Image (cartoon, rainbow, N blue to C red):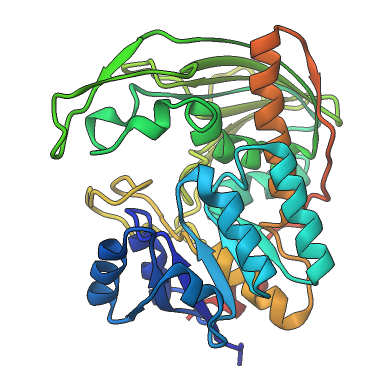
Length: 385
């Protein structure tokens, strides 16, 4: 029987609901206390989930708490994670690891010096869609991947988020920081570490209008670049073109396509856990479907548009599996998949992409990581209820 780790939640925003739902799926963690810089948010969260509300300092110094779940806004990720590690707690944060590479590097060094685990979202690459894609590549279904493209493009969060300003702010906003982690984490787990990046960027709109909540119809300034066109080179020789944009009303392109020397692959949405993978091995136009809805982390568990963050109807959402897998690895002294090394590599790509676009100069990726093995059914079942 697995040890059940007591988790202290810092940051009681919209995404916290999804992590509480992880109690329904995973057998080795339990969120027992919560804190927020706005104590009213913490009190409300505690009432809804029948747990204790406390201050940030209290939760960091609580001997009952084994792991801090850091769901604060991106610019606070570093400080909260640092304070958690310095308080002797393992920490698992929402993406990205930090908004500054040097801060991420410091966190990894600190975790190692303290012999503590540091983990980070996204954990969606552990779901059926990306894992099935990894399995097919491992089985040489499309040969060596040499080319590909990926796209995330939509109008932005201002229509459905009551406080959208951080997504458009300098040093914390923009699509590379916001959605880049999903695509980049999936790609490096499919293809291995990245080597270099070229990029250009633009800002299409100087102002946005809030579409919901108490500030509805208020206009605010767009401070950051909101569209990036990126060429990412991998150590295995693959070249991937990536579009990341907050400026596109709609499109009909696939989320990720990979082109090998024996065939092509359509990879499902890396922001979700399920979805079918498609492969083609000739020019007939026929694609073979590889379903994932019979996989434990690919089964559809969302059947209506619930309004939850990062969730769409008729899909799979098992956020929290990265936290559960890390807890299992802590208990068994193993390397976890949503590791600090992976997160730092992704952060390196993010910062290098933005610098490449800003300077119009290609950037070398300084870091690397060890690509994890396929997440097997046997391993998954150990942490499932």
